[in-house]
Amino acid sequence: MPQFDRVLIVGGTHGNELTGVYLIRSGVFADLTQFNFKVETLLANPPAVAAHRRYLDRDLNRSFDPIDLNHDRPHHGEENALARDINQRFGSQGTAPVDVIIDLHTTTADMGNTLIIDEVSPWALPLAAALAAVSPTVKIYSTQGSGRHDALRTIAPLGICLEIGPVAPGVLDAAVFDQTRSLVMQVLGCLDRLASPVVELPFTIYRYDRAIDYPRNQQGQPTAMIHPQLQRRNYAPLNPGDPMFIDFAGNVIPYTGEATAYPVFVNEAAYYEKGIAMILSTKETCQIWPKLLIPLNPPKSPLKRGTLTLVPPGLGVRGPIVLSDHRRHVHSSAIAHPG
Image (cartoon, rainbow, N blue to C red; front, side, top):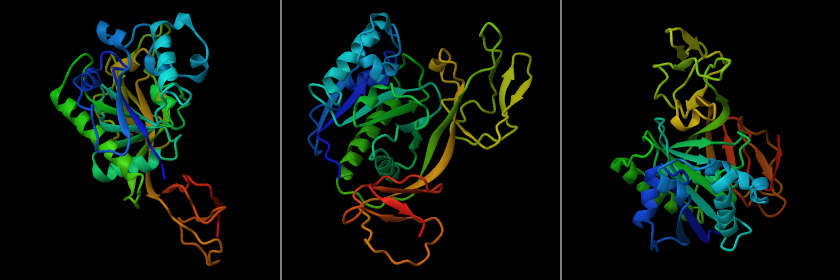
């Protein structure tokens, strides 16, 4: 079972996302004593907050690549120094390492309440399952497969992001403030639950597939916009042939993929500079089966469709087992056998 001693709640990674900034400044997460771990807070990018900007020199949430953290890069400016300082304090080799990071963000895309995980930690999916059980409207999005390892949350053994939207940059929305506060408290409660896990109900997870840019001319300028039928439809199915973009003359550009996709971060304002119009994801169903002990000599009868026999090296499986509809997510120190 996981032993979480210190959990860090981070706001202001992007200086113009005011929900996280003021949740940290307000002290609503100070002096929490009801959990079996210590809760701390961090305002990540005070200079950007003071300047009312997303960042000063480079995106702080793209500044935690291990190579950058191990080398002083003055040309990366303020955020490089901040990233190195945060890692030296809270990273796994830091002076005060934390076990979990909860990074608070808002988006201009209509993402609702979204939990973003990386699936690096074996406890990411169990946490997602626990949160889905207590808050079924929360969407679970995994960045696994994106190739990114540079977000602030990645310096902790278990790092997650809470992404709430739509909210305009530089705006405080009371409803979103309260939604985020409540969601953080639910996540903290779920982290406590992982110490005594139970079999959770199946939940839906959206996994990164690929990023899509806007159509552009030779000067790099967009030549089309998100089609109105796709705008604000995050997590909705996008089928081959569906309208995707519309150019300035009114011509429709359809989605030409071979399979149904599920767009997220549709028309996110901060992603224009990154060349991203949306991210396409796949949709899967997962279920977590923790503390499942399998006999060392299981019966040799044929298995039912969609099951796995797991033969652990010791007395039983010690980690959580994840069975998805694609049957490819097995988190344990076990060996899978076909029967």
